[in-house]
Length: 128
Image (cartoon, rainbow, N blue to C red; front, side, top):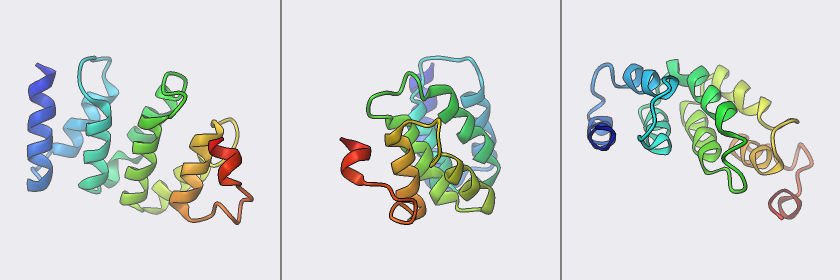
């Protein structure tokens, strides 16, 4: 029952329950449907699960086509990678600022890194 999984994961996050990050990664990497990916992605950032960087990036890569036009799931991944903040997480964010990522995703990744001006991003153009 995925509704219960979502509820238990949200309850376990503030408690930093042992094994939570690994369990969430297994769920995200599975072919299961019916759970809230955005919540689970957010929890991985909230608990700063450093082992989840590759998993989070896979979630973004796998969802980018279906996530248009607002790219909410990609934005959650970007935020979680920023919260994790390891060199590997920042490297993945940097990769998301380049082509072939959609402009909205590229801009949000650049903002998370604080390099949108350095990379020449125009907010109106990126979000227009």
